Amino acid sequence: MATRNFTKAAKMGILRAVTEFMSVRSFCRRRCWVLPLLLATATAQVAPPASSAPPVPYASVSQLNLMLSQLEQVAQAAQVDLAKLRIDKWKTDSNTKRGTQADVDSIQRNLQMALPEIIGQLRASPENIAATFKLYRNLDALYDVFGPVVESAGAFGSKDEFQSVQNDVSALERSRRALAERMETLASTKEGELTQLRTQVRDLQTLVPAAPPKKIIVDDTEPAKKPLKKKPATKSTKPSSATTQKPSPATSSQPPAQQTQTPPQP
Image: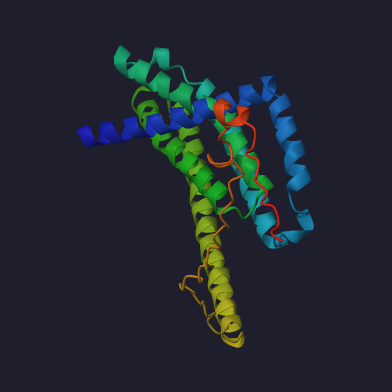
């Protein structure tokens, strides 16, 4: 019993998280329209043309559109039937009433906000496995929270209340099962395409000759150093001390000695 309550609480947490996330995104789309417009413009400028993407088979698109249309009808019928529940009139304790009413409110928010958003994403990309799994996970969470509501309606509600929500949860289960089968088919198809591409790449690699390895020569010898030329010694233009020595005044005042001439002899 404790494990079941824990599982239910976990599923409720996932369902509420998805619902709150979608409500925030819806609010941002209504209020903050400038940023998405700019992002869409930038994406349109750099995105490749749509013709480059492989076309989706017509049979796959038709199958998905039929499946999503049925799911939308189930969601609309479930909202009407959940709104008709008179949980406050049930003959049970107040805790059970509050818990069931909280589950009903969570389911209705998901059906009104989160589910249409996810369906729109999948319609835009019919064979996107991630978008397909996102819808399946949301339906799985809805089913796990819807089940206890049906059990409570059968135990404490009227026969008409129980029958209506029982039909809704059965239709929801059929949509979930059909989506699971489609997801399995898509995964198998994508795996086959990936295997084929790998084979083609391997065949092309065998046709292309292997390029010879490039030789890298590393020259680690140091270049010879050029001999340095010695600069010629510069001669000093400073006069020597002998040439710069001035004569003394006593020597310069005396007249030069006269030479005596000897008379010629006969």
